[in-house]
Image (tube, rainbow, N blue to C red; front, side):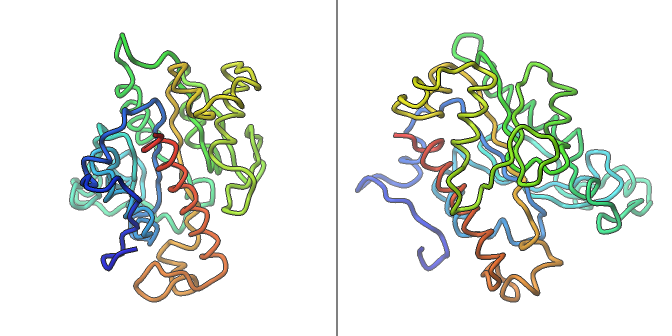
Length: 286
């Protein structure tokens, strides 16, 4: 980590980070992290480092749920490899329909039940999926199949919307709490499972991949998906309990993202591991 708080990757000597970060040919695997904008998730050094090292491959977008038809505002941040994604800035900088009409937001997210509080607006899910499909739509070199992996499925708003609106997209959902989704795997840093596990299981289920061929592929599950032109989107609404503004007094040093609680250290380790895997497997597979 340097003096500015960035985690720098090891790079070829004499090659500027920006040029090196954009050298490798992009594959068919993408990701989108999502978390509350005013929390501290976006300030994790690993995430800041990824944005710094891959400026042409990863971008940050800030928006708010009320701009997608929800009654409460809920500013949110998305950090994604979908560089063609366009979202309106958060309200009130980009006022939603209620604010334009001179009205207050009709609800507050803190007053909602857990399922509502943790749901993504369908229109926001649509915007993500549309950007993803556009990215891989080339008739000659584009994807031949689409697979969305909902890493932290929660109450199912993301994969539920995709199944409803985008039937051509295969879905594989995971969460630590069993709500009937396909997988119940722990994504923690010390878990034997991770994104590669979810991808392998999803490919076995939806693409009828040969387990031996999948295991033997030099690029692992990501390499197998790329070779078979299967576009994969990891949607990662990582748990925000230790990052949200309500939790900072307990879990973080005042005004910083520095973890002080055991739960915060575990959350940071998990997210650092997710970022490291995405950098290794998706952004710089060479």
